[in-house]
Image (cartoon, rainbow, N blue to C red; front, side, top):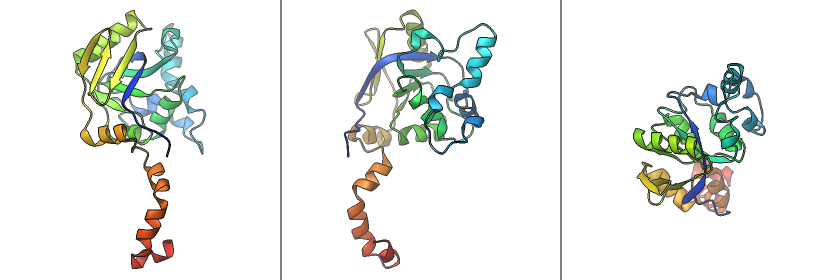
Amino acid sequence: MQDSKRIKLTGRGIPLRGNDIDTDRIIPARFLRTVTFDGLGAHAFEDDRAQLRAAGKLHSFDDPRFAEGTILVVNKNFGCGSSREHAPQALARWGRGISAVVGESFAEIFFGNCIAIGVPCVVAAPDTVEFLMAQLDAHPESPLVVDLEQRTVGAADRVFPVILPDGPRQQFLEGRWDTTAELLENAGKIRDTASRIPYFRDFA
């Protein structure tokens, strides 16, 4: 299996203000009618972006200052609503690809769906999130550093603690977040074990 460890992620950031941004806003339901996730990135926040353009405003995902961003900074309860796995898939396929999300809190299923595709979601204090957003607004070229090993996020020569549960953190550090790859890599061992279990013998 190729190296899929997630230890320290560095990149430009994208501030996205607002609490309770749900999965229907991240990727509207009409874009779910697809066999694969290809092309979803272009439609991330499609309706929110259109509404802001109509009002003469600019969504973060349309703002050229953040076009190279790979680390998303959000507020409370991000990813709430329906459990569609298309939401993190759309984020991962937008622009250069969202590689990590820093936020005040996340919906549980969204958090799990992000782990499944290797996108860590780390929780930071509200004042930390506000500092990061203000820093990105003022200096969009400034890099953010999400260090999963140290459980910190850094920006502008400052470092703040973040929360990531031990289980997901270990998965990222060891590169064991991709359960499908894990199964394929251990297919031989699975067949061997199945062959010794009476009701699984036909599987082998």
